Image (tube, rainbow, N blue to C red; front, side):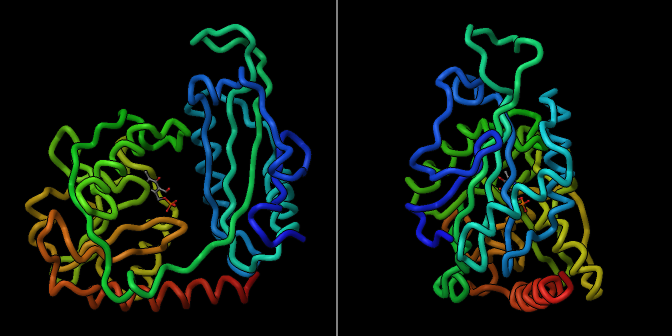
Length: 292
Ligand SMILES: Cc1ncc(COP(=O)(O)O)c(C=O)c1O
């Protein structure tokens, strides 16, 4: 059992070994081309949350990029559960990555029959800070400079990193991205929601956003509690008149935004629907823990 990050055990191509001893080839296409896909799965009380949905999305990413799926569904599950077991943390988030593999000669065209590189590790999943729950976060809007296949969870995250840095340079915690068509896509590592007159509104799934699993969970909770949820395009004007704005992701659940481009959102505090949803989300997790 390992409970400090420095002693953690990782999985690499069939072996479990200390992170400090894990090595990959410099000719790995993931390293040279960003040629790979990944997933991040939350673990509550040592149980993989929404594993089937994450696995489905992984398979979609692999299929879309023509990277062969190196493991069966049950092998994926067993590998991740073994990794979780090797660490003491009750709540964790596992990161897994599949690259197309090692190719000795540089060529954009992948060689045939490459063996994918599989890497996974886990970290403690920390609850969102009290300060954020109390005050929310500040975001700015930025042009979405990414490609047109954001539905693939690709490891190629340079635009996301650049936009995160741009947000930081403007004293913001994150950014909401605006597509070339002038509608909101998502956050740099999250989906976007707004609340208007009691309706929960989020952009529809498309090639311009990642089909977030947390987004899906929020939708199912909204349905269960008769909160009207609408999928439609959102413009910056819509956002400017929103009662509440949220970001959602597996490691942060739903986060309230209280400042948008320096302007106060709602009354400047996390909104009522967010507070309600937060409670429902915790109940949903508790039910999941008890039933698994
Ligand atoms: C670009 C992007 N959109 C949305 C999400 C939210 O996805 P999920 O809820 O599955 O974590 C993420 C998560 O990392 C992301 O990177």
